[in-house]
Amino acid sequence: VFSVCSSMRLPPVKRRTGPQPPRAMREPESGLPRLRRPRMALLLGALLLWPAAPAGAGDAGAAEAAGGTVEESEELGAEAPQAIRRLLAWLHEGGAHWSPGLRIREVAPGERGLVTVSARRAWQRELLSMPLDHAFSAAECRQNASSLVMRIPVELRDRLARSHALLHLCFLEHYLFVKGESRFAPYLETMPASLSHLPLLTTVNISYVLEGSPLLGDILKHRRDLESLYEEIAWELPDFGQLVSLADFMHTYCMVESHSHAKHEGNESSPLMVPLLDLINHRSRGANLRLGGSVKGELRLAAHVGRHAIAEGDELFFTYSEENEASSKFFKQFGFVDEDLPVASKVSFPLRPHHPDYSSKRLLFDESLVHTKLMLERLGGDDAESYLGQNSGYRDFPKFVIWRCSPESAGFVVQTPEAAREELLPYARFVVFPRGAEALRTDCDVTKRPPACLRPLPPAEEAAAAQFLVEVVLEHIRRYPGSLEDDERMLLELSGKRSPEAPYLRIRRDERRCLSTLLQQVEGIAATTSEAPMQLPREPERTSRKPRSAPEVTTRELGYGYGWLVFLPALLALGCIGRSCWRRTCKAPRHIE
Image: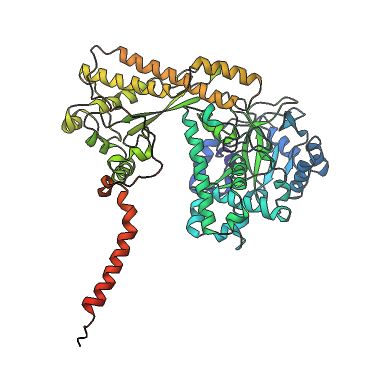
């Protein structure tokens, strides 16, 4: 009961690497830390609903996995490079074991995977088993007071521990400096030398192949955040910037991000990297393994066969993606497109200054957004767009919507078509609502952030709301270059050449196809309106003037904006000189001859 209950509560595997070996997965929570007596009745009840394994399957699997001889270690790595064989020998000495009949072999050019050379029963347990003390975590560096992890301030260390950033800092130290002296040296030797397929490290001109895609902004922001973190650590540890280059920092970060797992205990999660198990590849559909726990005097991670038997010669797979995870998000982390994951397009529906009652409506958005936007507006003054750019949208108050479609193999079918009428249209009514704040509170639900007008408006206002939706979707579609047909033709050509630009272009093409389904939905809403839309104030024309790289100090700007900051040091110096002179002349006693 204990072993089955512990495996029941393990979450699905989440992470994996890109096409370069080795691969990563998400480590499940162990059954031991969460077993408490008040929950035992619930666990026993759930046990009755758990699908039963065939008689003898679990015992046979455990018997096959028991022991783990040197011959089995050599058999597993018979077709693997020498570095993998050294890793297997190190893991075997540390107590890892695996079932006979497994091979690590090349499954595609430059890509390794785990293959079974013998058939496997459904529900076979412990095909692979790893002790947790052979998993790399930030605890390796917490025990050393002179490590980089312990030298940074406590506040920064606690902040980095909330993600895998602290694990990255520890891994960086072992990978770049400790090297062969690290007890994880056999594992470090198996790390891929190149990760150029990952968007963060690619040499592809992503500004061209992802033009118009929200993914471009996400990748660039991620790079800037990592650069800021590098500068922050170098500020706290002056020798860090001399010892570690930004290129090494980015490269080791991508190693950890694509190989890290999450260990869950209670309400806390701690990232770690698990050798051997991260050689198993990913498949979002048709995965034949599940990750579970194994408690035999110590906490372990184990890979078990799923509900379906595995044929001889089949490759073994985990599912590392989250349920309903977008293919673009998965691609950003792992550098390849999973053709079975749904497509998602991120669309911003903004409240803009030319909309009715803009000044009062903007205060009804999320408080943190309102605070940030108003502060930026006060600091920027009336001429802020000349610094931020004409299309910065810093006065816009957006509602973000993730529009999801099925993958190409399923025809890009909309997952929730009702969202256009049930979520977008009520928000659009709020944006165009023209009859003042009091009427807005009466006719709409202002307790939501942002508000929603659930009841239809008068026909002209209803038509204006539908027109707003159509215009916003068309605006997003126009951000992409060329036509959808051009992308289809380029993608076909690049895919035939196995070009590194092909997956980026596919992401862009898929987003456009999904956006076209959103346009069909909102145009269908607009077609049901019976009257011409209400005339809204026109948005001011945007000039083509380029943004200034720095504020230009002029006489007109001295009274507001940033211009007065230029003279602030001089004013402070004059104030100090004047105060000193006043103390000498006015407060000091005068000597009269």
